[in-house]
Length: 100
Image 1 (cartoon, rainbow, N blue to C red):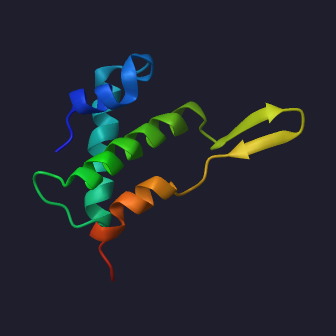
Image 2 (cartoon, rainbow, N blue to C red; image 1 turned 90 degrees about the vertical axis):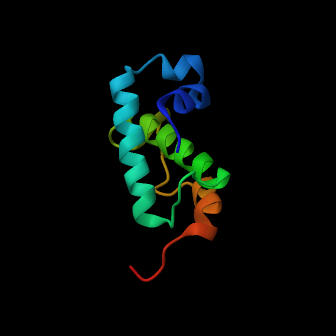
């Protein structure tokens, strides 16, 4: 199972340092629960699921900075954060629960 230290290492000092440990732990707990609802998980997590979990956390933290899920690129351009991350989907695909 991914730990707070794993998440901090994955994010790097620059990003992890922007958030208190309590916020990082809250995101980790929330995304662990979300992943367990979507995937067949076990302890310890297989490496692809652990990587997907850490990426889920990274994405959730990025979305905290842009609550509407979009960012102004200057001028009349706007970029939206996609609702699904292709790398997370790829890593979780073999472990997905179906029929729920």
